[in-house]
Image (cartoon, rainbow, N blue to C red):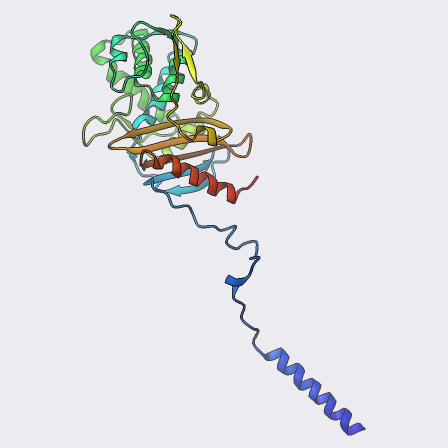
Length: 299
């Protein structure tokens, strides 16, 4: 009896030692149905976009949420008009009345404005933001020039200098402007230059400006009673809710550009900008970035 107990004891001890020192079996993590919290869902790969440059940023904290060549200086196209409008609003209140000249109506890529119509400044700001009207921003430029009694031969350079100084005050000192619209000056020279970083610095510094909200207005009526319904250039408007503001841009040199400020979550402004995409690709790029950000920071 004692003999049997002896062998049973040592047999159990041997089995225990074998169990302790055997290597643990390998587990194929690719077959695990529920990966750990720090797995693919949390660290999903950054989205692939067509744009050459892009930036997404929390405009309250300044946290960068997505970046691709965001410091590269590129043609801005009509996003240039944002700075032109800020320069206008330094010299004109929203309720001042302006007139539309022949020169404004004959600006390249005309809108529906008519010679001799009268509008409030805020109406033409809305038209510039919503449908990127070159006519509207020209009328505002002419109004500010006349109000400040600037000689015609000095007017353009005077206003471009206002734009440069305004961009600098908003934190974007490296931006360059060659006209007020962002239209290409030639096959090699764009109308305005800046980076994605520059644009979101401006957006962050100007969040309280009425300029952004004015871009959501869909129609204006002149003093003469003529109604102008806008054709919004931002195709993503209905999909980005609530949208604080946006501005599009497209020229041959710039390609497709888009800046949007959207609340996500509600009450929390998020800025996204893409530069040097295609005319249609800019909208898809912003949409892809926004959807990716929502997976990283779900409500």
